[in-house]
Image (cartoon, rainbow, N blue to C red; front, side, top):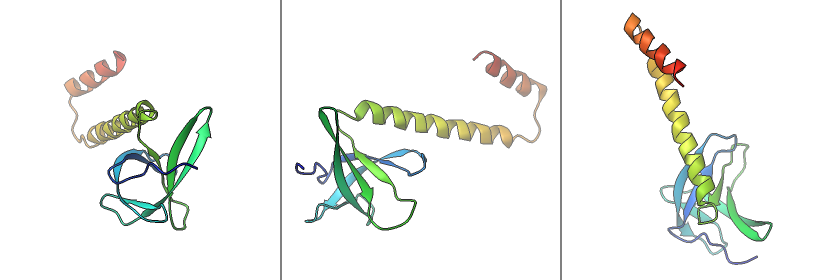
Length: 124
């Protein structure tokens, strides 16, 4: 195994265990054993690499026990497109939930509001 690319300042994408989305983070401190922490957190991560075809992809998992452990991927030129798309999908999902909450919170809808919503939905 080659030397871990998880160095202070390295950009990573943290993924929840059950598809709860992706967030951007940065490596803060690297320990002698190869484990590292992210900015603003004391949680340690254990790096590992895996080869798909002719490329090596670096990932890490949270140390400790439990079923809710997250994983992360190194954000580099080989993973940028995939991770950027995942982040954009997460932003869209959050935006959709916020819109749904706003519609749900409307207590006294008007006919004009209902017409506007129906018009928007039929034009998609």
